Length: 119
Image 1 (tube, helix red, strand yellow):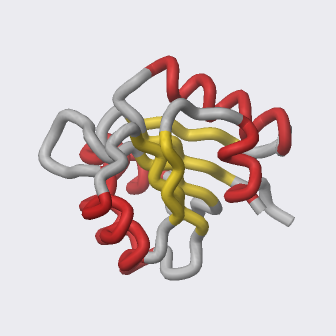
Image 2 (cartoon, one colour):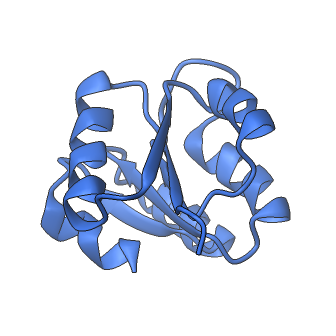
């Protein structure tokens, strides 16, 4: 079996490091890719297509939000696990995430909040 890959997209370095640690604590062999904006994530994806898990922030600098990126990713990654990890807990954000088919996790990030979404 090939090595699994996760892409963490968040403008906060601290949040990316925390999510990286949580994933690697559970799956030490996973390859972790990172991007600080949705636009940067699209560049990462040109070199790494086989992603098994996406962690997306909602509010980031650049032209796309996390949900904009998720909608775009769903076209290619129809069954790939995606989770929106955000401090933006508005019902409109939660409802849009649900309509796209991605899970919603409220910041702050904890292992207990992330682990259920990795399986």
